[in-house]
Length: 125
Image 1 (cartoon, one colour):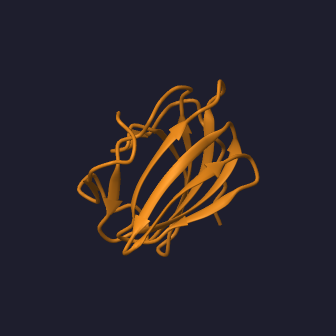
Image 2 (cartoon, rainbow, N blue to C red):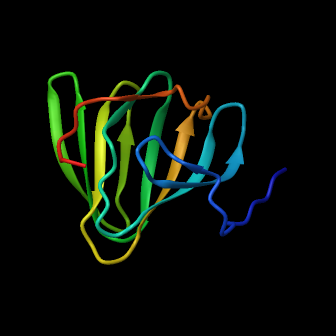
Image 3 (cartoon, one colour):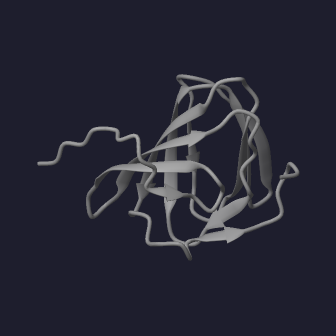
């Protein structure tokens, strides 16, 4: 049985430039806390082997997702949940004045720095 508390220290700066704080991990997946500061736009990536579920806790943003022939931009506001299936090209940005705070569930757990592949994005960085 695990218990975690959000720490002030950043565990990783993600390949997309967001701040990641790890919370819990099981063999099947992990959960993390993500912050994208105001005015920032992430780099665009896709994942080789993991899928993600996001839940927006605070802030205001947008995410661009492209998978197969489907492409969309979705508003990210508190209470919104989205999926990022493995292989989806995505990029997100903070369009508000407060940090964009996201709870991330990665399945399986994040394997390491080679997981994210940089792709052409929707917005300039």
